[in-house]
Each structure stands twice: as C-alpha cells, then as structure tokens.
Image (cartoon, rainbow over all chains, first blue to last red):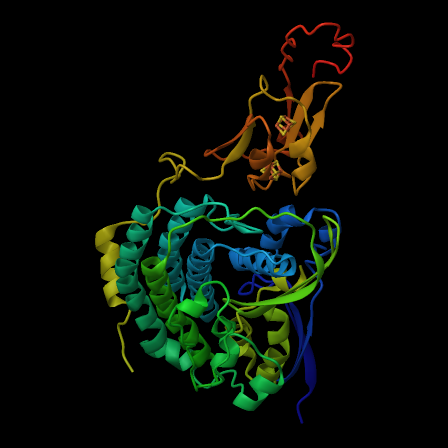
Length: 359
Length: 134
Ligand code: SF4
Ligand code: SF4
C-alpha cells in the first residue's frame, strides 16, 4: 500500500505562467485528486464600474484580459447598447466581427505556442509565436494597438478600415493560411506530439456537458455549442459552423483550436467581402437603465457580461462570467487519475486565463 | 503517424534567417496609428480638466491654479481617451513609446503656457479679469 502525498502545483510554475494553485493528491505517480484554488491576481475591475462613466468603462472592460481583450470590450458594448436600445450601424458590427476573429487567431496561436512549450517542444513554440506576429501586425495597423485594441466604443467602433487595407488583409491571410497549415500539420500529425496528447485528460461528453465546460473544451468532447451560433454582431450574416471533435482528449482540444483558426480565416474573408459601406458609429445619448446579459464567444469559450444600470452615467453593477472559471471543474475531473507528468499538459489544454477569471 | 513534420519549417528557417529584428540597433515596427505615448502642446491647453476627469487610469492631473499638466507615464495605459476628449485638441498620440522609466521619472510635469486671448472690447464688460487667464 503506497502512501498519499500532496504536491503543490503553482501559482508559480515553469510551464504555467497563469497563477492558479493546485494541490495534487498523489499516490505513486498517479494523481488521485486535484484541489484548485485561485485568488492571486484579483484586481477589482468590476467595482471600478461605479467610479467610471459607462462610455469610458469600455477601456477597463477591455483590460480584463490581455489576450481576448477585444471581445471583452465588444461584449460589454453589446450589453450596454441593448440596454439603451442603440441601433449599431452594420459596418461597425462587421468591423467588430473582423477584429474578434483576428483576436481569436492570435489567442489560439498564443495558446498553441504555450502548449508546445508545455509539452517541451520549444522550437514549435517559437514557430507558433512567429506566425502570431503577422496577426498582431494587422491588428496594430488597423487599431493602433497590438494586444489591447481599444477600437470598440458604445455605439459603434472608433476606427474604420479602408477598402484597400481590407483587401490587403484578406489577401495576406492566403499566405498566412499556407504557413498555418505547416504549423498545424506538426501539431496534428507529429508522432511525439500525438503520443504526448492522445488519450490524455479524457473528458467524456456527458461530463463535459454536466460540469459546464465551454468553448473548445466542450466542442472537443463532441458537443456542438458555440455562442457565435447566436448570430450576434455580424455572425448571423456569415456562414459559420462550429468545429467539433469527438476525441474528448487533449489531442482533440488541440485539434479544435487548430481547425478553428481556419474557420476564423474563412469568416474574416467572408466578412471582408460582405462588409457594407456606411457610418461606423451612432451618437449615444441618455443613461442606461435596466439590466441585460450579453453572451459572446471568446477564444476560450462563452463569456457572459451582465450589466445593470440605474439611470445615471455610472452603471450599478457589471459582472463577467469568464470561460476559464467554468472550465475549472471539468479540468479537475480530467486531472483525477492522470499521471503526474501529464498535469501541465492537461491544465494547459483548457487554455487557462486566470487573469480574466479573477478580474 | 508521421515523422520529420518539422523538417520543412526547419529548412525554411535556416534559409530565411532570423525572424526577429535587432532592436534597438534596428528600429521597431511602428504603424502611423500606433499608440505610443501622449504628448501635450502646453501653448494650447485651456486647463479645462476634461482629460483628467475622463482618464480611466487617473494618470493625468491638471491644476488650474498652478497652470500645470502632469502625467504619470507608469499609470497611463495609452488608451487614447484623453486625446479624444480634449476640446482644443492639444493632446496628441505619438507613435514612439515612452522610454523605460522609474517611478519618479515617470511623472512628467508640464507648465502650461497658454494665455487667454483678450476678449474683444465690449462696452462695459467690467470683470474681464475675474475668471483668471488660465
Ligand atoms: S492615454 Fe488613456 S490612460 Fe493615458 S493619460 Fe490618456 S486617458 Fe489616461
Ligand atoms: S489637455 Fe485638453 S482636455 Fe486636458 S486640460 Fe488641457 S485642454 Fe483640457
């Protein structure tokens, strides 16, 4: 009979830059149980909503996360706009969609890089981040910011992209797709990657659904659920189909994200073709009153922004349910029974973003 | 199951050379709309305090009495909000980032040199001086 010991994992860990702490109950080399705890990077961003007026709060909403910042800003705007019955111009909705998909591309490439690093595949990590640079360049050229775009506002967007730049971006994505194919090929077909990921961290379809997994974690377990199917922003006018895998393991989660990047490229190209001319913003007058839940698909899964107005320039409450927090219980389930050496890979496979999970 | 998946990438990288640039010897990539840092034209600022009120990070401090405009570079997260709200457009966003600073150096104090132009003389507009010339 071997003895149980507890090994602390994180919040400072070489493969995991995110400050989550796990107490791993180990017997032999097997993890019997994982006890997560968070609370290392709480910043109190939600409370700031009482101190900043609602149009300026967009800047803070964007800074909830440093990776999927644009979609946080856009979802917050979406919530406030619905509350105030603002009709956002079509062109602004298309631009938001384009930038959202660019954010998804950059987030997934970042994650692929970190995941490769977690497996110990350093040069693949470098390669993923080299590719990500193209995406960041386009984001900077169109919004002025590489990571925090700051181009979304209540009532529309702050910047327009002219037709020439849109064409250039769309053509640039053709070459990008070729390079991406080389990268994805390694992730999906390389023998060492496959042996590291296949049948690791299995989460059955039932567990994924019952434990409230969202985003790629849920879709990798065979459930076709994606908030983009709701048709917010311009998604209703584009041909969007969620990427679903049946593997339920880390490999399937990697495959979902890899294939979603192609889907993003297609969405961007389609949006560039269909984008209508017209104004990019409307003037917002009045003060928000009432409450609303806005849902959107982040690279990590579904995000919910709840806003409550009280008829003043300051909102009464803003609450964000980020995808990572709902993916933690499924992660705990995946960890039970795995090998100690697989823990970093499994934790990374949910694409944890503790910064936005704690706000 | 395949082997040598990386071979193509490795070969390309060998032929292509490094993807990085030798910063700072070689200048960093910058686009015309990159947000680098906020600069003020002190001869235009009317000390209205809009930038101070709207700044999400409380990075700006404007003093009407002392005629100063102060920015804390370490607090400012370069969001462009102040540039947008300034009624006289005396703030601009430069594309160059501000250099690395310490906490003390980060506070930049600018003396406002704006002088309120004389109002065109109106018959008996008595307290012209009252409002102060800031
Ligand atoms: S750029 Fe944004 S954070 Fe910086 S001083 Fe202006 S408003 Fe404040
Ligand atoms: S910089 Fe512009 S907004 Fe700020 S106090 Fe001066 S005039 Fe007003």
